[in-house]
View 1 (cartoon, rainbow, N blue to C red):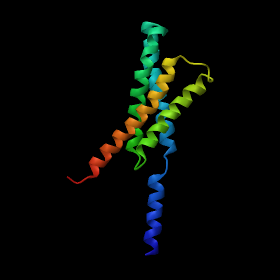
View 2 (cartoon, rainbow, N blue to C red):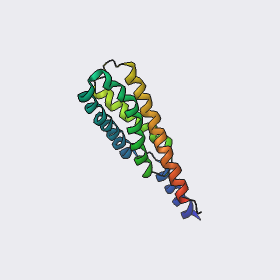
View 3 (cartoon, rainbow, N blue to C red):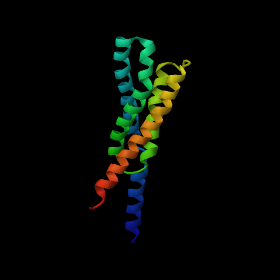
Length: 134
């Protein structure tokens, strides 16, 4: 049937597209979450020791918001998570006007990407287990 193939093409198109709105919101909120951890740490411990909170916060916050992103998508979970981490990284680089950063922050950027990929992977696994009749 001609209508069936057109319908299938539309469904494939919408399910495989990148959800940029969710990606941008997830990346932004992840970056805000990192600052929400870093600023109190600076106030309590000073800037030097507080820097060590950035890598774990980068992974955890990006993971959490990538799980949220993954709940609203149907496919390409890991790609969406990587994009969340890239957006969070680009937001920080833009905020700091691309100034040189300590190695610890560069590691944190990598952890944002890994955290994003892991978060949407978890969301994808949850979604696939929820849809499997059992």
